[in-house]
Length: 364
Ligand SMILES: [Zn+2]
Ligand SMILES: [Zn+2]
Ligand SMILES: [Zn+2]
Ligand SMILES: [Zn+2]
Ligand SMILES: [Zn+2]
Image (tube, rainbow, N blue to C red; front, side, top):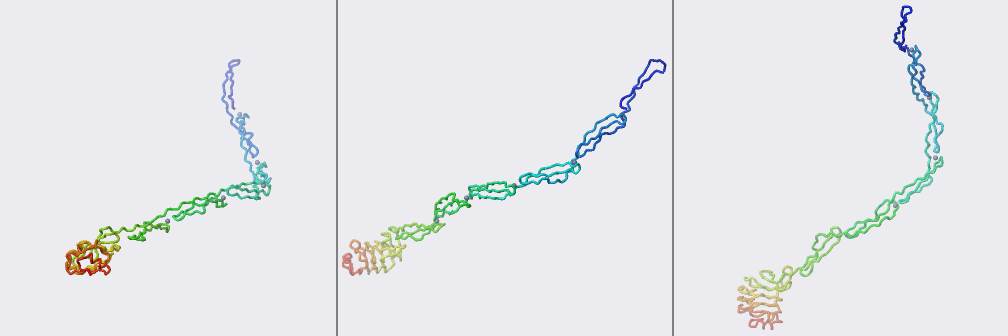
C-alpha cells in the first residue's frame, strides 16, 4: 500500500479512557501494469502506454507518443506526362496504408528547329531564330560578331637597293583594308674595305672600288695621280748617275764610271716607270777620266756644262747627235785638256753653228 497506515490501541481495563495510536509503514505499489499501449503505423503515432498499480489502480506514470513509421512508397505511376508546355506528375502510393502523394515533374525541353539564320560578320552580330516543333515557341539567339582577324600583306624588307614596306593590315576574313602600311627607308650600303681596280700612274688617276657587302652596288673613288720624283732625285743606270732636273721629264747626266772607255749618253732613260729626256751633261760628269776615248752624245742634249770632259786626256772622238746646243749652253771649255787630236762629229745641218760654238776644236 502506498500510504502509511495507523493502528489504534485501547486500554484493556474497562472504562479506561487512555487510548494509544501507533503509525504503520506503507507496503508500496508492488504490482505494476501498462495500459493504453499503441503500436505506431505509417498513418498514426504510437503510444508507449501508462503505468498503473495493479493492486490499487493508481496511475503511476503517463506514457509518451512514439513516431509514425515512414510510408512504404511504391515506384510511382505517371499520372500526367510532362510536355514542353506543362509540367507532368507522378503519383506514389504507400503499400501499407494506401496513402498517395503526387509529385510534379519538370517540363521537357522544347524541340527547336532553326528556321532563320543570319551569320555574323566581323563587325555586325547575326542571329538564329528557332521554333519548337511541339509548342511553336520561338527563340532568337544572337550570334556575336567576332571582330576582324588581322593579317599583313604586301610586306617587304628594306634593302640597300630598295625601300621596304611595313605591309597593309587587312582582315583575313572579310578582306577589308584596315590600315595602310608605311614605307621603310632604304638601308645604307655596307661598303667593304675597297680594292684598287686601277693603279694611279704619273699620268692618270687610279681607281679604288668599294663593293657593298649586301648587294652588288659599287662605288668608285679616284686615286690621285702619282707625284713625279722631285728635282734632284738620283738614278743610277748602267753605272751612270742621273739627277732629275724637270720632274717627270728631264734629267742631267751627273756622273759616269771613271774606268769606261766608250760612253754613249742616251737620248732618254727609263726609271721608276718614267721616261726622262737626258738634256744636260753635268759639270763633273766625265772629268778626269783618263780611260775615256770615245763619247756619243744623244739627240736630246741641250746643254753641256763647262768642265764636263775636263782632263779626259785620251778622249779623241766625240759624236754629238743633238741639234739643240747653242753658244749659251755649250762651248769648248767643256773639253778642256782633252786629247790634242780630239775630233767632234756633229749633224750636218748644225755643223756651221757648232763650229762657232766649239771654235778652236776640230768639228767635222
Ligand atoms: Zn496500489
Ligand atoms: Zn502508409
Ligand atoms: Zn515546345
Ligand atoms: Zn573582317
Ligand atoms: Zn648595298
